[in-house]
Length: 442
Image 1 (cartoon, one colour):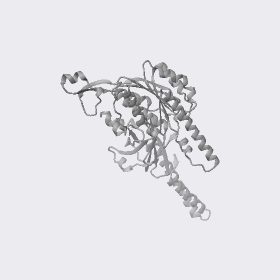
Image 2 (cartoon, rainbow, N blue to C red):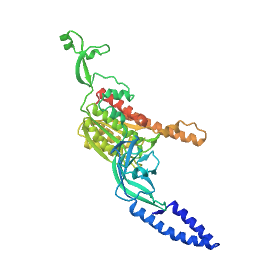
Image 3 (cartoon, helix red, strand yellow):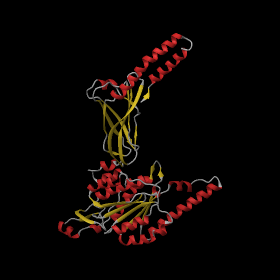
Image 4 (cartoon, rainbow, N blue to C red):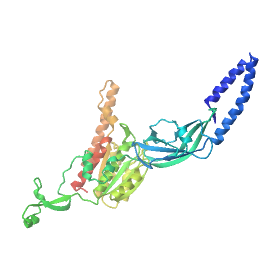
């Protein structure tokens, strides 16, 4: 318990009255009797607040599953329980987790009259903004109670546990849950890739349309039906896609307002959804700050399992080894797989990965995805004002040039490479995935 504003004011007045008692016997007599009258009142006010005032029940209602950066409502229900008097003033704090930001200003003053009238009590609703993925827990609420005479204030804690998870914000995926995949791709701004006849699975026969290739004409069906019939193909299904995501220092850097790792994780989940919709199976492995392996699964029902396995994944400035990740994948995979390794490759990776890349190339198809370093590009294009600036720009240009030469050498050896900005990774990955499937390289 702490002194309230009324007790501070009364003590100050009593002190001033005592100072006046040095000059007046009447003031001294008033000071004495005022102190004798105030003391039991102060004690009684404090005892009543301590033993009788906290007769409140608090319950919280908040969704167990929320999306990152998506506002969600939390509701507190406060009811009066048992006998006793209500405090003169009640202030409320909800102890929300650090991974959420509240948009309402605490403390919140509760309506004492609504509680005093009984009934259903009162409800207090406010908005939360989840800013970090992962699990969260509300421990409880704190109330600051003021005594009837405002001599004392008491802070009490009410345990009111609520727990849940914050998932990445995938409105596009949820909106497309029952829609055609082509609509999702069009809304995402992805380019339309023309199907090729080679390397495709036969789908059906149909009438010839202007623009169809003569190589797709089915001459037997044409002679039987006496009109031109062509074969229609679809990309092969029941293939396997493995994502290897770097959660170490390589992607633990800001690109705009978000970490490159967060953009990469969003791209992995989005492409997983697309591959599952195309009839392929998807698997995910991580390396760096955390090592996880989600075995290949097929069908759109597997997507929630991927979400639950990756929603709380974070990056950290710790060493990461693409070589070890590929070596582990090579030991686990039993069939030909399209491996997509997302990291930030540099000149020194050319030598360290040379042996494992040759082994991967024999059995699998590998796509090496590297995210661009915005700082190096800005430094390389910066106009030099001093000799020191010129040296920095030259060093950055040389560094970027070495990276491009490395990617060119990998492409020349038959590997697939891709370099893009973190913000463009989702659409670029899906386009590349569709190109690979429709080229028949798997």
